[in-house]
Length: 277
Image 1 (cartoon, rainbow, N blue to C red):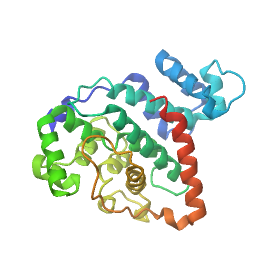
Image 2 (image 1 turned 90 degrees about the vertical axis):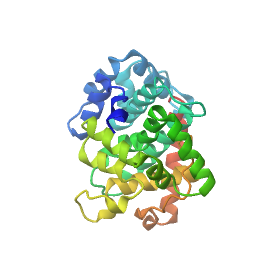
Image 3 (image 1 turned 120 degrees about the vertical axis):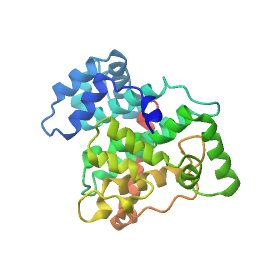
């Protein structure tokens, strides 16, 4: 386990401060703007997003503070988190056949849908939905990066047997990518709810996070988002996520019209942001 964690890149100061701001209700436009402005590449990407035709803004936005005032702290912060994290992945060496672009697309899609669900349901830690979605499959990247031979063996075992990836990971490594994701969250001192959400995103019914009802733990939202995104054909790259158990998140309780509204919102916002990660 230590070998995996030692290969993780350190979080940038900007990324660390963005994550720390998640739990602060008093975070201001000015503070988020200041954090983003300290990273010229990030600032440029945020302005590119706001000025994209997909957002249908009139007039060009030339300052980060104006961008934050238009889209709000949460949307700008989520955009900055995704841009910073995917840029960090781009610097990591991975084996032949691994697609960082597919991995990033999957992570972003799960993050965005989980965040939308967090706005509709009283989750135990709704402010962590986006970052937990971004990082839920980090363990898969760690396996590909640190143990490419074993990664290939897992891929072959899934193809030959059709068994779920987590079972094949356990057989070959003795640990799953979800376990590794959870350990990474612990190493990065993430909030406990985020650690649990990524650790149990394939087994949310085992999530020990306190709270009632348990079906509203953040891990259930990540599981539901992950399941839907995989159904769209946007898997994380490498071995497929076949044979995953159905989630128990009560999205269907909203009714078909409301579910479709949420999914339409997700597809619209994902189309906008995915072009910049």
